[in-house]
Amino acid sequence: MSKENIKHLISLADYSNEEILELIELGEKICNSPKDYAEVCKGNVMATLFFEPSTRTKFSFESAMLRLGGNILGFSDANTSSVKKGESVADTIRCISYYADIAVMRHPKEGTPKLASIYSQIPIINAGDGGHLHPTQTLTDLLTIHNYKGGLENHVVGLCGDLKYGRTVHSLIKTMARFNTKKFVLISPEELTLPDSLKRYLNDTYDIEIKEVRYIEDVIEELDILYMTRIQKERFFNEEDYLKLKNSYILNEEKIKNGRKDMIIMHPLPRVNEISYEVDDDKRAVYFEQAKMGLYVRMALIIKLLEVE
Ligand code: CP
Image (cartoon, protein in one colour):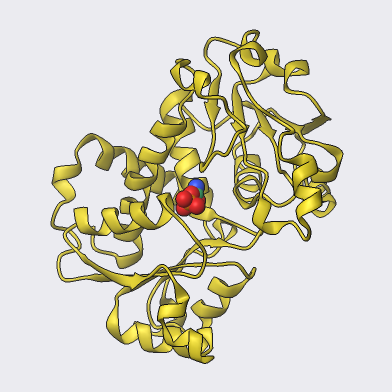
């Protein structure tokens, strides 16, 4: 395959709504019948290149490839690779292209997976680049929403926490907007509001109501989905600012008592302290199921990018 014809996943903006729905549908099929897909990637190798820590994304990708019958290699500490000697991402990916059939990359610097895709002979999947995007988390979120709410359209979506640095929020909001979201309710401290550029983009592109508030309790009754996020300590420039904001939201049963019975509470995880453990027993809390969905949608994505279905 020539380099121009290789399909990557850097941003879901490069995918049509139909392609996204196809991935969701395939993810659902795999979830219902995983054994049917046990051999489809036999003989293929996936490289996981993690320049930043991860539990769910890395392990779910690796588990996905193994469950599809493929093999995995990679690193979770770039200091064990020749990057430590000063090798560029471009040279690294050129060589990895000879050893693997598909690569998954997480990097603290925005745009690095995109740069890798320019030099790569194999599909590159963006597993999170700085505070920019996290498209496979968004696919995970969409599969969860589709599963619990029966579809992606006409929801009132509340996003709470670090809306400034949270890449999962940036990816999700841009993609949900394409599926006729009824309303976005942005819940954050003033210091961590959604970037103005993203708000402008939403206002210029879609006719979706956007409401900004400080407290969850003020809006809980109107939400179909409450998407909690962690305050992103690693993206702050100084510890003092983080310490000031780290306890901004601690969701507990009291705060969600007026929420709808069919509301779902999501979180990309990891959580630090923004959801009390008591909420885990609430039937509306779906964040661990959400982490499970990540496995199936990543299996679907690998199948599609390797064209092995
Ligand atoms: N949701 C998510 O990206 O989790 P990890 O950082 O553990 O991969």
